[in-house]
Length: 207
Length: 251
Image 1 (tube, chains in turn purple, green):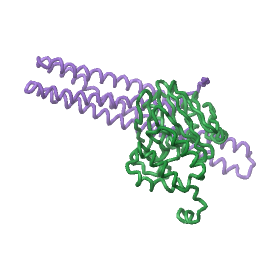
Image 2 (cartoon, each protein chain N blue to C red):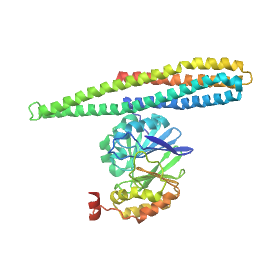
Image 3 (cartoon, rainbow over the protein chains, first blue to last red):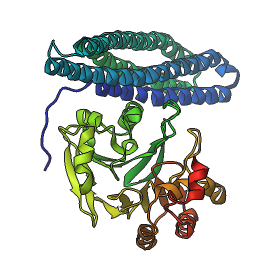
């Protein structure tokens, strides 16, 4: 029988949740690359008519690669954040232990000054780590914005795909499928970014 | 860190390890996870240093709330010093670990997680239909020590038995057994204290049907290499710390 313990979610867990959510974008990126490959094959089969699809295929591919690079970067940063967050937690524990030591020792104790200096050093270190954590979060937020920015040309790519498709009667359906796939994958990516962003805001408030 | 799927047929086995970002002087470790439906079970989750990448990798495969159970083969820091952090991440989970180490392991921090003692004769866990057995491996090397055996997947998580000291970039599986023994020999001779315990364990393990033997350090053994390992280990004289020649070599 499991007990049901309610404790505040530590920041390192929230950071891992953000990373796991963003990690799903990697497979969405792979899906986009497959779509680009598919589009290239259809375009080759369409011969002369399909040539106009070349730049669009390249566009989808570039979009996928950019997104994957950014996600991997955030992935590393989130592990770094977890590490620092654990360090911060340890410093908090040390600070509490030194506070207790100071109290037990009393102000008249022979080593009171030494213990106080150590306690203050831990406090300074902890403040520095908190600053680093905020910096790390801001970098992650910046990278997420970059992903959103790189998604902007998607509307253009999808619209062009549909326009080109309407000119090629034989492959119209296939090219429209490509457009649909790009549109739905990009929507999924945006949703993931939105969710991750709200968790990131939560983190910024708790650091 | 890298991860690799070892088994996927109804339930999954995943190995995590080869952490290239870990501090140089910390021994590389393999962590394992079994997922069955909405329950996940982590074996030897590792030390504090590997916790951040472990948490990141584990949550790629399972929702954090679905990690219901963890297992510690013994009390060493590279096995379970991350407990205080898991205790905050998965407070409702249970830790299955040898009864003799409870008072020791709790030093790593265990305010929320429920400690489930494993008796000397062993035990098991039913992960919503997937049954895993805790096989005694006492004195190999800790005085209270267990392996985990999955009869359906035919995988034995062997803890420190079969361990090798490898670089972070090494492949997950043994490719040349004879070559690999060089990386295992000193570890087994020095860390394993008892030929008698070794014999007991080998007799017990030879009765199991094993496709993969998965140690906590170094490479995993597959197929015939499992039997090769058992033969090699049987012939090895362990407990060498008082052998003066060995002491000189390791100095």
